[in-house]
Image 1 (tube, rainbow, N blue to C red):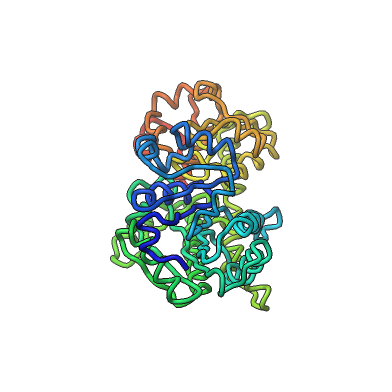
Image 2 (cartoon, rainbow, N blue to C red):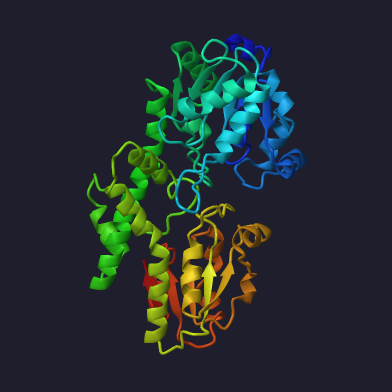
Length: 436
């Protein structure tokens, strides 16, 4: 195994496999201390980064230009690395089962090019056992090296929060685990060179894998509780946000909010845990109940919209409903696993025409991945209802007067999923405003 001094003196490199939300910030940050190779199989992604722009907006142009990381789509470059960090996505398939295709593909690529003495560390979110039970055999098969004699393993789960400019790689405590103490020591030094918040050393790779997968499972369950409460309070005619603000005056009340749960973390990770649990004969009830509630919120919002159209005396079939936002969360361009599509699909079941605008999302990607056309803001006209689905800051410009121009009649139906706007301002203006 290479030493930390070998890395510091740049006798060997650190390679990052996968340059998305997780891998690129890591590559840029590590390049301030080490010889870094940034590898991605997406040639267009590499070309765009070399040209100086990160489409995910996680790394600004100035930081990208200042980085010394060598960005490449040539896997042969991995042979120069003494430490290889794999940061590829871990989605679920159409049946909500873990899709390890990216991890397996990355492992094969790494195995074909890794050198003897290499440390391979995974950051991808997986269920306990994947790193050792699935990845090591692939690395051995492709490299013709033997574990642990010829290479060792590590796991350090990513904790990147897309769009968050406060909680960054450097300011979030990092979990690190190794297949032996020497590997854990080395990875602690490597990550410790850039992570100012400190390192938590897990006792084993499986412990670190489990810790990661329950982080987002816990959030998912808490949000599901808020969503269930929102449904109850709506039936009782109580404003959910007002209830949460009142309850939040107690020091230990957790500040979760209701809403759509999508993206590549919270809406996905629980299925990795439940898959493994069912494989060993355990049948999770709370986790899957939370998933059912959260997966049903798009349908609930659409049905609420239809009911309010009827109450306003508007025809549902042929109604024009605008949707503000298509990404999975605010202020990011990422549309992976966006649950706004659930609202759209349910509205279309009622014969409603949805008109979608998102200033952050890529139009070509929306068409390619979902067949969804994104419209300019001025195309949202003659509406019968408007749904604020994603709380992009760019929507702050839409005040009472701007929204009024979007409607054909003075009877304005507005659904604010994120409690984004000032409720009283819009009620005073005579709007029919509903908040989740």
